[in-house]
Image (cartoon, rainbow, N blue to C red):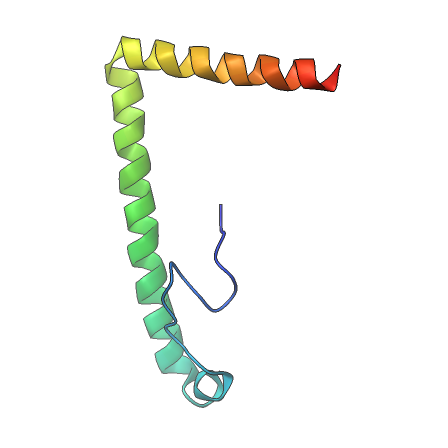
Length: 80
């Protein structure tokens, strides 16, 4: 879920440099929290749109479940 290296959020560096982070920890935390909250909101909105699509359209739900089952079978066969 969290694929970004420590100190980076979605390609941004809200607290570049350890010296800055130490000297201005409060400002750094505010900036960091702002950036992280923006990214979390984007993730929630994107996942909600996906959730609505799957729940509102039975054909999409069936295609998704069929694809997931195919992936499951492939992995099970690869283990044998």
